[in-house]
Length: 60
Image 1 (cartoon, one colour):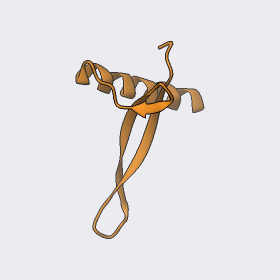
Image 2 (tube, helix red, strand yellow):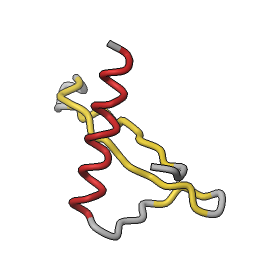
Image 3 (cartoon, rainbow, N blue to C red):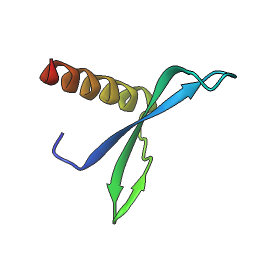
């Protein structure tokens, strides 16, 4: 991808505060600030999934 970007994982919890799943967030570093910059939401979602899966494959 050639640019600085970050993927964060935030837990999704139920009423008992038990982890139900995770939400992945995509952020780009723009001028020293993290921003959610989306030109195409579907494309950005695909990038997050591809990067997450690539990372998972590398650690297995």
